[in-house]
Image 1 (cartoon, rainbow, N blue to C red):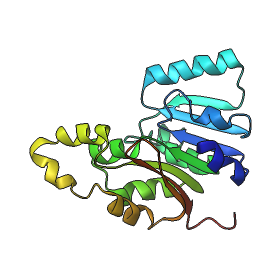
Image 2 (image 1 turned 45 degrees about the horizontal axis):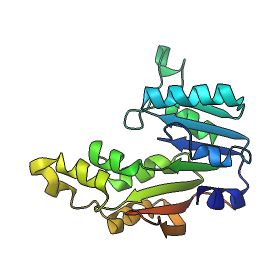
Image 3 (image 1 turned 135 degrees about the horizontal axis):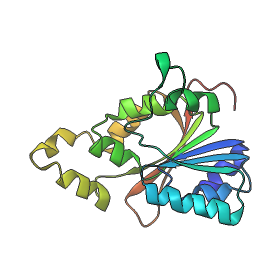
Image 4 (image 1 turned 120 degrees about the vertical axis):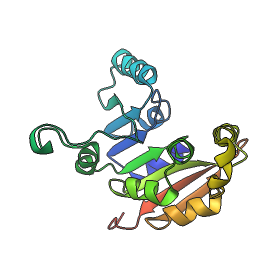
Length: 195
């Protein structure tokens, strides 16, 4: 599905946030000039880096990134190193992928859908995002950990996800992923001009 959705967009730059070892980004590696893959898992990023070296992939850059705590501007007057958000805005990816990520942002990070949508809208022209429904085993596991606060997360559902994200994006495609309790969305930033 990733390849089917990305290739017609004829993009040059892609970022896969929470991209683990780069598996899904590699489905389009021969068709995209520049790919960035981030993940919080040092081992996954390290493995991806070794794959990049072994395969001589000159168009993929893996690096460690915690989406819930993106790197701030640092140095004197916070101007020696730009924040991650500033760098992503400068990079201006044609497509951002966020697969198996939103439930971690929302349930582990306690970030409302509207706020994560605002985050992605700052730098994403197109967003491919996977939404695991409440029936998904990972979502169940994360919700169970909330114990007596589980009712505070009643908003975690497809309708509220769409309400939050459609404030910043318009839907291009929506498709359930066969054999799972997950839905894949292709969204276009409302501020993007043209195609």
